[in-house]
Image (tube, rainbow, N blue to C red; front, side, top):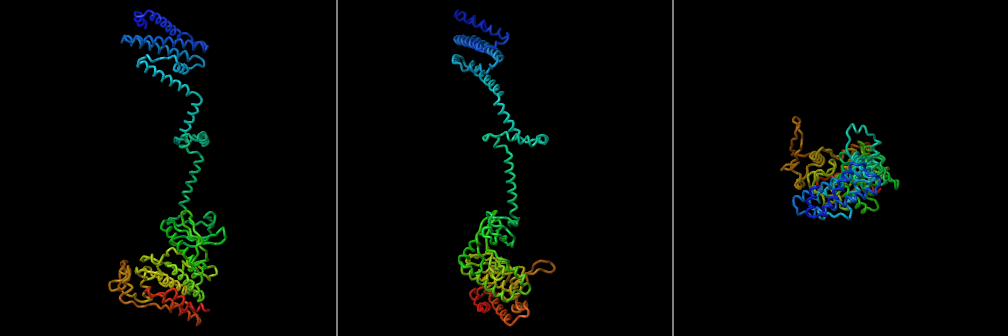
Length: 562
């Protein structure tokens, strides 16, 4: 360092004297570093530091003036910068030893001092000073980290890590539930990251409830989509209380319920939970509304719709409630012998009135049978119900499985376009069952049903067969009946051609056989009934008796006159 100052003295004596003074001052600073720390007088220490800054500043200015000397100048400048760094390191040691005076404060004072001017420095020195500033700032941040606020933030971060990281089996066994709750309760900042990643105890309770609800959703339905009936359930906003299960059909469950608003009993038809049954339910609602509008005085013996709602994804129809269905009545009061003549006549009239209403609005019920007829508690009124298969006459398409098989008309099996005659056929089968307590046709397939028809009514006319879409399944090209039988030995189905059809049943005998000790008037009525049924069971739907003509029949008219 002294060599460089001697070279500069050849050019300017004054500058050499100044540099020699500065050299002495810097040496005095070095020697001071070996001495004990500064005294506790804060103001004197600051003055000394300011003086040292001024000397360094002047020294740097002098160095920049002689930058034209090339390498020697750069070498001297590097040595001077090393001396500056050395002085600064010694100053930092002194400042660290001072009470309540930290190194970052001195750096900040040095950086913000208006007296500094580094504009004359070249790029190397500027980069070096910038790097020093970065290190000093880093030291300042490290010191601030030790303060209380940063420590609390670190503690919160550690808490978040503890709550988010999965614990091993050993760690999980050592940490108690109380500790976990305390950790969770520490996080209260609504904008903190933990609130989006950590599940609090209240969130866990909600999640458990949701899991329970999803399980209950599965328990609402059985495997086939029927609603699981629970006696005592209150549905539709506490309006109805389920009392018992009445029955189950292809489309729905039917329950008896208490209307908590009117205290009346109602029947609720709960449709199966699938799209097809939902649409079928909506269609039935439309049909029932049309029936109610066409019969405002409730005289035509069709069940009344009182409302509808949706419960657990099931469409529910609220219907008027009657006591029991006709099949239950027959089992209880007419098994093997049928109902008495008076009840039989009354029920027949009421069924025919229901058919008249259906014809008036242009609907076909398409599923008349004792199961779909309900009777009141006094057993004097019946009503036709379950209009799930009902449709407009013109909307029908040939299908071989419309109507329950035992009550299925021949035109349905053959695939002939059908109309109101299918309801007349089903009604005749139902009347026969009420009169005898037995099912009229009991074929276990459509083919066997046709055989039953011909056993009672004879061969099906060829003109009717030609209209049938499914005729070839049961008749050959000669219009001979193909009876499906199982081979006794192989068990395979084989076709047996029946060329000649003979009538094997007598309807009159069957009606009289179920009744014993009949009076003359009763025997007369049974004869009239046999004539009515014979006309209702014509194989050709075009020749089948109409509803209005049925109501004019002697079996009906004589009862009305009485």
